[in-house]
Amino acid sequence: MDELILKLKQEVIEQLNLEDITPDDINPDLPLFGEGLGLDSIDALELIVLLEKNYGIKIEDPKDGKKIFHSIRSMAEYITEHKK
Amino acid sequence: MAGAMPPSFIRNNKMERSITSYSLLHDNKVIVNGRIIFYQENIIKFADFLKTVFKQEQLAYPKFYKMDTLSKLGFLAAELVLKEKSIEGYRPEAVGVVLSNSSSSLDTDVAHNETIRDRASYFPSPSVFVYTLPNIVIGEVCIKNKIKGENAFLISETFNGRLLCEYVNELFNNERVEACLCGWVEVMGNSCQAMVALVEKLAPGPDGINGSFKPLLFNEQNLNLLMKHN
Image (cartoon, rainbow over all chains, first blue to last red; front, side, top):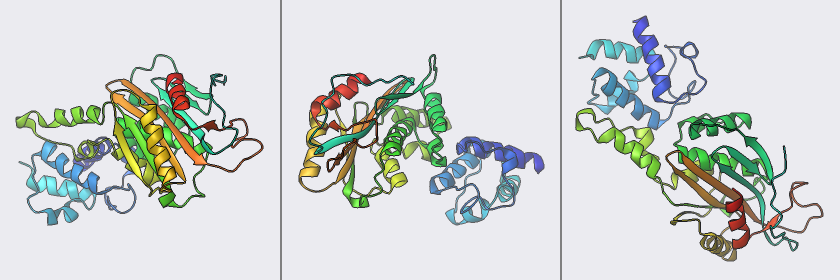
């Protein structure tokens, strides 16, 4: 899980163009939205694309997004459960 | 740094409708109100040039890094103008933005097309797609500076100083604006050019607006001179 969390941090930084932020700056348990990284709705869409492109996971129900993208750890747990 | 003001600008002695601050960005050089504030030889990527200037000027705004190149260019040009001459005294609705270029958002359109042309690897990027309109650059400038006035993005094959001047003057004549950012913001491939000017109707002042920089008359001739100076 730790390996996946680090990989996810790197992918999120690259995909969302988070300049001057390193993986160490991201606490995997803190919320991704609303505080900390300052992500917005377009970033949320980018994360959906990231899951599909990099892990083959398509989110069918948009209502699940809030739970899946709560934090890096929740993303990692969802990927572990659903990766094809 | 060395001054870069060409001698032939028409000064606005009446101080009626003036260019009170301007910026010029072209490939590897940045000029603000006649001063070269950045110059670097051998810049390979224009995106790196914009990022370097952004950091040098300490314009802390994380969203800058998420913008497409056209928005980065226009945003940076506008910020450099407003850093010299604030618009804080105006109502948000009284400030307009009128920009123009030749290639619209084609550079980003091409980038978006790259993400969708292969049906086997069809992953359009939302953050690229949202910039596939040229007027998004105006939105970025307005969001940052809380501007809510009239805006337009004009497309013409080459810089059209007369059209830009007439459009902005109409906004002033109809009392739709009391200040207006206007200019040219063009990006295509690794070629880019920006000229952004702040136009204001000002009361006379003894020493110009910014000490060393004295306002230029806002007219077609001076806009064309600024573009050539770029």
